[in-house]
Image (cartoon, rainbow, N blue to C red; front, side, top):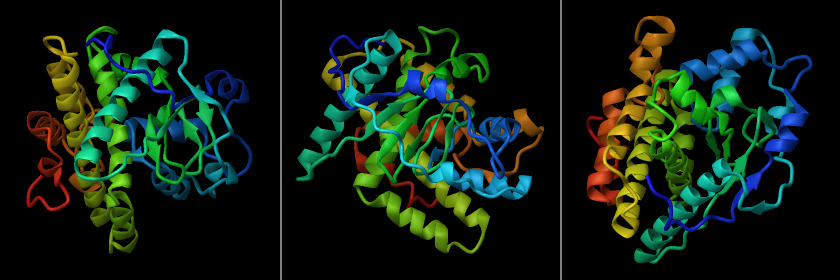
Length: 301
């Protein structure tokens, strides 16, 4: 993957140094690091507002939600980081901004790009207290993507999503584009409608099924970004798409459940199977059209 022609975004908020010094939240009612790690291993990343998953864990641990789980993110000046990882994130984010601005403009709409907050270890957010084990997620309450870049190392070391750091680059870009896909859903009004439907759902199984459809659509929207960016920049190297599909396979609910608990529980899926994630990413990549990503109305996933 080449980023030479990408424009770096100035919407990156780098809070890595300050967040590393703040450390983990504590006190009565807080989740222990063991519980958070279990949440991270089971979900890999929740994608949207992990407070939903964390609140469920509070029941298991007998605790109550802490005030830190709904804190505002500390003020950080946005810009372009100077280190290689930060620059890479800014370049990928900038390319998503350019692609989605063009797509929205073609239909007479205005795209309002999200901020992307880099942190290290933990970070207060309006959705949940972000922690590395939870993975990256999009918080619709402040329209930010939260990312601890150590997650990229976990992709290679813990999940085997790619063979080495160079091969991981497009997989890392895919993860960022997936989270941007959730912001696109928010901009289109899809996310609020689905969240309302989840709140009104009669069972956790039904809510999970809606979540799966939202996550697969974000995979498809990530595919659209890759399609349009490839047309514009010719940035992909041979094997990059296969690498992204390997990542999608590594983070399927069926594979993660099998690896963490030894068996698969389809009713507990929140992201979709490995096969579904690969197929919907390719739907977006092959078509480059939002119409190819209507997971919410699809009779089969």
